[in-house]
Length: 79
Picture 1 (cartoon, rainbow, N blue to C red):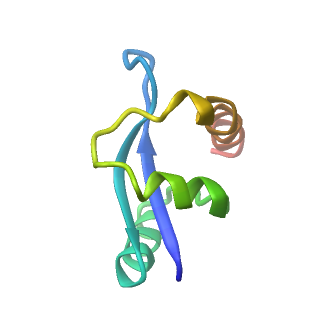
Picture 2: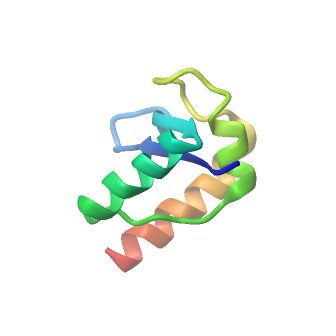
């Protein structure tokens, strides 16, 4: 089953926050909205698996800091 999660981060935050997450049709809609808004989509299935289990508004757990940091650096480079 398809999964998707969206995160938000700015320098005032202690860590990135999960702002959207879901499976199936909801995951597809999250990706559609990202494309419509010009938001970069990064395919990281293992990370999405973990993030869809978190309540919205949750800070990213420390074990994911490295991969999320790499994604944020990538997204800033291509934007």
